[in-house]
Length: 181
Image (cartoon, rainbow, N blue to C red; front, side, top):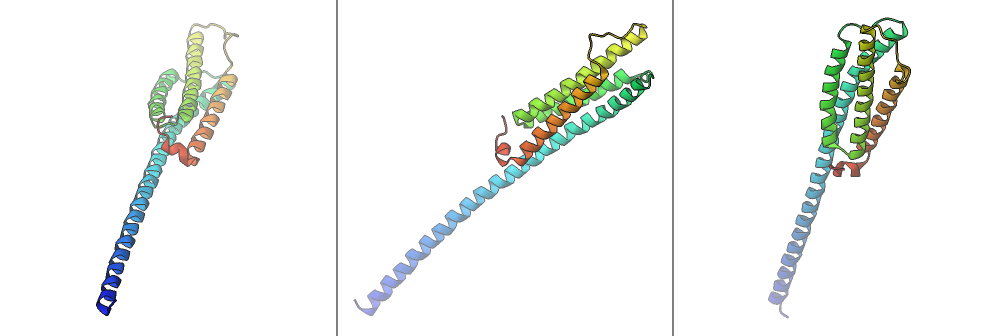
């Protein structure tokens, strides 16, 4: 081989090495881009879920304020303020709207716990309405209905279970990818 051929082989080898190197760099960049896109999407989903859970808890907190006030008045033997049932209905509507968003964002385990919270609050609302109706008719309290304390505890337990499920969903990276379950 003469010097020209050696230079030509060296140049071809350099070109091939450059092409292989560039191809590897392109492939690595593509994989990195895909990973980054998935990571950003997962972060976005986690934030959307967190916002949905926070909005639900905010509406629950508003009903808790009314529930605590009502419970204190009941323990002191005072009547509920006029319009308590109407205030409850409005809070139930708001809580239900935020429940729908939690159900949409998932996962299913969190949506089930949110529905349990909603059911507990609705049970309490029903007990308040029954109490107001019975008081308006001067009817004695019924022994076959759950006590205010029992319903109060039921709401607190369901809220704690929802928080635990929501926290687990937000802390589990794989749960973010599972948007429907």
